[in-house]
Amino acid sequence: MTHAPFHHLRMFPMSRPSFGLVALTLVLAACGRSDAAAASGEEITVQVGPEAMTIAATTTLSSGPILSGTLVAERTAQIRAEVAGSVVQVFHDPGARVAEGTSLAKIDDRAINDSYLSARSGVTAAQTAADIAARELSRAEALSKAGAISDRDLENARRGDLTARTMLDDARARLAGAQKQLDATNVLAPYAGVVSERFVNPGDVVAPGSPLMSVVDPGTMRLEAAVPAEQLSAVRLGAPVRFAVTGYPGRTFEGRISSINPSADPQTRQVRLFVRIPNGGNQLVAGLFAEGRVASDSREALTVPETAIDQRGLVPTVLRLKGGRTEKVEVTLGARDEAAERYEVTRGIAAGDTLLLGPALGISPNTPLKVTQPSDQPSPRTP
Image 1 (cartoon, rainbow, N blue to C red):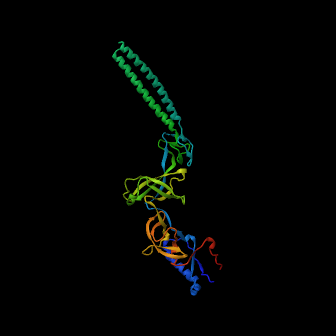
Image 2: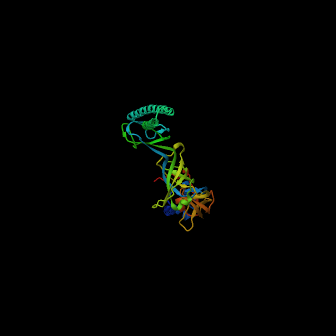
Image 3: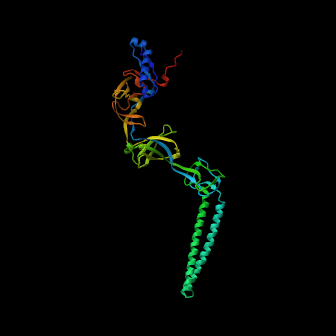
């Protein structure tokens, strides 16, 4: 019994412009290797690898606007000095996790502490003077009722009490200011987070407003992106956004639109929006590039990869494997999921159909086909 010859034509993914070249390569390879088979009338069986095939499947089809942008921490604080002085200590380096209220740095407080002690003494003196004035007023009021002093003496006592109480209030305000400055020499974390930047070292002299450190809260990230104004109707507050992040291959993250800029950029005609992303486990970090889409229209549909569709003719077609042979099938396309690079197919094929991909579309219809496995690959030919 004579068996039809197998021709090992390994398929590798290529871009769509390569279809013509691959088709020509297949034809030439088949002709070059099958002269004897063609002369004897034997049928040629083409072999392809599993990477050149796909299964039509029902998947979640999303057709909302595509977004791309940079991740930023939703809460970022640049800690600045509130008092002037020399930096005595810096307690944490970038990357350190800190709790709310943790000491980040210490500024020399000797001069400020002297001012504080002076202000506290001032309050003590003012309090004593106010107590004396209050007693004098009480005595003057009693004597006035008895007719023992003039109205002018009573008025002087009242004026002295008011002046003493005003001076006490001023002294207390100076003490509160001195206390605030003294507290500011101990620089604290405003919330739990991670030190992202450090701008000073011990010995540096800082002025009020000088940057000391930056602290970010990685618990919630934000994606800042933009959409064309003509796609704004597909965007709404609270809409889910699914996206991939550089550095996390094969993973998908999800957030929701938290705010939309009320005006478009007059030059780019794009509208900025912000996506709030829960960051459980602090996996994501600020500064990474993210790309995804707004899931404004999400539904289940029969889809196939873009590379399974031949759109060179008037009607798009696929090459289906059925009964061990290739079959060219006209299909009707629906929506396109740009992020997933898949097309919806509304007519022509069914879920579970096996289709050829990319360069394998150059194989002629009704060609016998065998799918090879790694162990089926032919041994390298020896010279």
